[in-house]
Length: 217
Image (cartoon, rainbow, N blue to C red; front, side):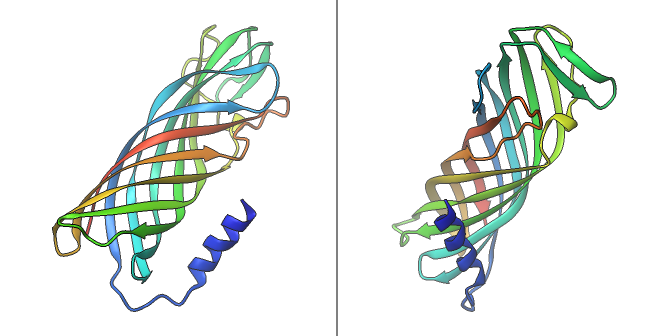
């Protein structure tokens, strides 16, 4: 992972060749789930989410580009707490969940990707691509519901860390509409490698699979 971060940082610092930037808009439906890293909590199902934002690409060599952008990511996933747990809410203070309660977390992040994109030569109207990189995410909003009804869309921002990091890998196709304009479709997997919970007794990362639907200009 350290080698990947160093490599991507090096790509950013390259003196990019004088080619035009490409910009795009994407809407990505996704499925997310927690990956617990401590005892007495378990993944309890997945949830639907979304990623909506702008992308930017800059080619520094034939078929190779630095890619970044900014987007809003909404993730929903469930955790089962085998023991009683205290959850701190913004409006109503600390609430206690009963043993074997499931908390349904809805998280919203501001996401900034840092990635390397590899593209094939255009074949007819189609170009194939792969993208690998890291997502840097800033917590914007977090709410939760609980199966024991102790939480009902409560603001649990204090329970969620400010920052989240994940690496992603995926690929897809671009269908040319003429010039640099193209429709884009792809499939990506994000693997979280940072604990998203602020609770010292528990830790869990979050993973998701997303379908890229976008247009590049």
